[in-house]
Structure formats: C-alpha cells, structure tokens
Image 1 (cartoon, rainbow, N blue to C red):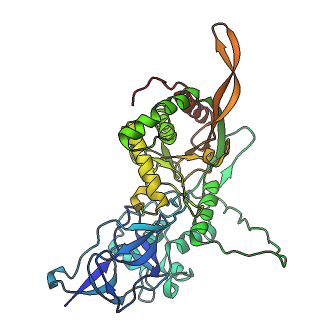
Image 2: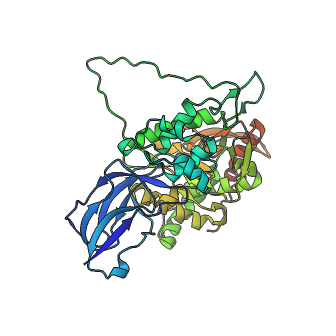
Image 3: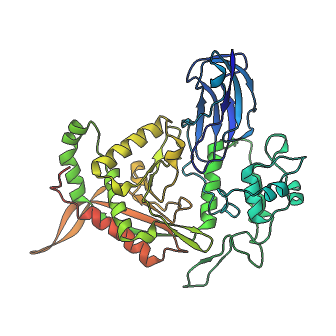
Length: 452
C-alpha cells in the first residue's frame, strides 16, 4: 500500500485559492479513478475535483468552508501504487458543476491587487506573518502593497476557518475602513467624470448604507445563494468603479436575417452545427474593435491598458436562471465557421456546467443578447475590468423608410437596437457612439451572397 497526496489543482492563472464547498467522499470510502471527491468554489467558477487515482480516502485535510491555496495537499488516498507515485500535482483543469456568476469578479481594479502576481520578498513575509496567525501569500501580497503592518492585520477580523483573514476580508477593510483608497468621482455639468480610484485622496468617500426594509407577516424571506451574492457584489462594484454611459443605435439587419435563412439548412447539414446570430454579432464586434481599438482596454488607476488580444465574452443563460460569461479567446482570428463552432461549444458546455475555469477569464469585451428574452434594448452593466459591453435586442419586423433612386418608400424591414454601455472615464461619447454605429454598419451592410 502507498499514500497518494491529492493537491488542489491549478484553476487558471489568476486563481490562487479556493473554498471547499462540500466533500462528496468521506474517510474510509473506496474511490475509483475520476470519482468526484469534493466541490470547490473560486471567485471565477464553481468546480469539482476528481480523483486521479483509485483507492481508499484516508483523510480530509480541509473542512467545508475552509480556504485552500492552489497546490496545497487536500486529501490523503491509500492506493496500490508504488512509492514513486505517491506524490503528484493534479495539473489538469477541474470541471465546473455549479452555475457561475454573470461575470467573474475582477481584481486588478480593486485597490491592493496590482501586485497580486508579484513575488513577496523574504523581508515582506517576515513582516506580514507571525506565529499566532497565518496569512496566505495572496493576503500578504495585498498587505505589502497597501503598507498594512502586522499589528494592523491582527486587528482585522477574519471570516475564514478559525478566524483566518481571507482576501475578501482584507479588500473590504481597505475599501471601507482605510482612508485614501476609496474611489472618488468629481463632476460638474457638462464636464467629464474624473476617477481617482487607487490614488490618495483628501477624504474618504461616504459610506452608503442600504435602507431598512420592513417585513410583514405574509412576506417570505429567501437568503441569496453564494452565486447570487457574487453577482450582486460584482454589479455594485462595477457601478461604483465606472462612470456608466449607454448609447443606442437602431440597425436594419434585413440582409443579415435573409442570408441566415438562406444558408442555415445547408450549413447545419455540412458542419453539423446550427448557425445563430451570435457569431455574426461577434464578427461585427471584432471588426469594429479593430477600427476603434481604444474600446478594447482596461483601466488601472490612472493607467490605460491597451489589450493586444480581442477576447469576446458572451453572456450565456443557465438553467438555474443565473448567467455565466464564457470567453472566446482571440475571436478576431476566427472565421465565421470557427466562431459558430466556438459559440455553440461554449454555450452547450455552459448549460451542462462543464466549462473550465480558464474559459471564463481574460475577456476584453462582452456581448449580451437581451433579445433572447424578447427585450428590444437594455442598459447592461460593464463587466469589470473591461470598459464596454454591448447588448443586442430582439429583431422585430417594422415599417421603415427606404431611400431609392425613385424616391423614399416605406417597407417592412427587420430592425434591432444595439445598446453600448461604456466607461466614460476613458471612452468619451464620440468614441462610444462611433463604435456602436460601426457595429451596426457591419450588420446592415451584410452581403446576402456571402459564401460560408
């Protein structure tokens, strides 16, 4: 007999820790290869950890609701393997099983996370760690950047196991209790909004308290699930971070609709895939981003980060009613067939809860289809740390005025609204308006004779 040390697998470049949600196997249980041992949660996606070996579970090293660092030993399994195979790192991606949030909570725009991936020096470790309390490398990194001393860390209450200080505890403390880190926005009529997030300010932003809610005898109180809380926090954070502005354009997409009707049967027969409007929208967005690359940026304090890759996130509805945003990496390098297959694959695996954590990260622009719910337009909230999100509405037949060589005529056309929400700190009205107009132009000028 030999003991196998199961390590918490890597779940993406920006994921450093996970929380144990539930153990599905108990000590003494026999385990087959690829049996699911436990469910874990990160701020990106919920996942399950399968066993890479067969044997008997001897010990669980972390309990439910405990935070575990990537690479830490989480369980001991007794196997028939030789001693040389007793220790291994599970490098394979874990498989999500629970619905994920509408958008992953970004960290690079939150004060204290700019040095998240940098190494903490030995002196920093000695300063930020003491014998009485354990601090994770992530917590130490944030504290080092924010110049939080060991004594100050000791005074922050922790919500982790045995009072351990978690990343969220520290970020909440930085944002709500320490002066000089809260975002401040100043504006006068007709002037652009100036954001000073992550920069020293004269006074802390006022703390806004939610109004008290009265409850009558017939009301039902339902606690938000964990994913609902993540979504709620992410939406509020986005509104506090960015100065949201939304521009609207109505597009005549008749040629696009007629083209799809003409090719969809042959396309499905040839490719064994259904072609929807989503890949067409994504193609138009990638073309417009190449025309206006300043839409494909992020903001870090007073720095503008121009993204090299065009990674399009597409909001997908889950059976539970929640949303997840899988990302098509380097979407501009795919043709329409490739985009169609990527869209269908990600959407199908999202509904089946089989997305990998990396497939919900690194988006640079998001597309959401409010038309799938019958809505004609919407005002979407920006998916931080991006600076823009496009909502496409339902396609409706409407009477429209057409200009012809014989004069204006009224005809029945397929019309839809495009709604672009953008961060007015870095995207002004001209850029936002021209970008959404350019997307509409690509859709309106669709070639009805295009080969695919």
